[in-house]
Amino acid sequence: MTKVDFYILADQQLEKRLDFACRLVEKAFNSRCQICIQCNDTEQAEAVNKLLWEFKQTSFVPHTLHSEDSQSPVVICTEGQMPNEFDVLVNLADKIPSHFTRFNRVLEIVIQQDHILATTREHYKFYKDRGYALNNIDMRM
Picture 1: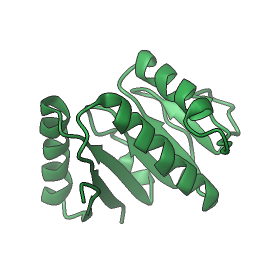
Picture 2 (picture 1 turned 180 degrees about the vertical axis):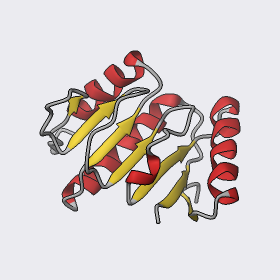
Picture 3 (picture 1 turned 135 degrees about the horizontal axis):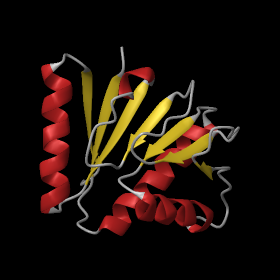
């Protein structure tokens, strides 16, 4: 069954959420996982794509925007797109992707911004009501 981790940050800025997502993706990639980053739209996907190249000068995380024939271990997707056979889903989207159960782990990143708090609370309730294993990692300390 899919495990769901909620990373709770003290930050309010969306940029901090994306930066933290890049760090999680780097860690998962270094653990030899295949990762899908789910975004709301093309604009957010492009921002994540750019940030993965720039977030850390000493890091290289091979990634690509979604395409049907992508062989990259990290794929950035928008609604309706999904790579096959991936291990980890980093959900930055407002909606929970319908295909989330295909992943071993789902990572949700919470920041202290009203819209994100409301959205991730809804996600938490959705997963909990369906009996998924939930883990809260409080990064505010």
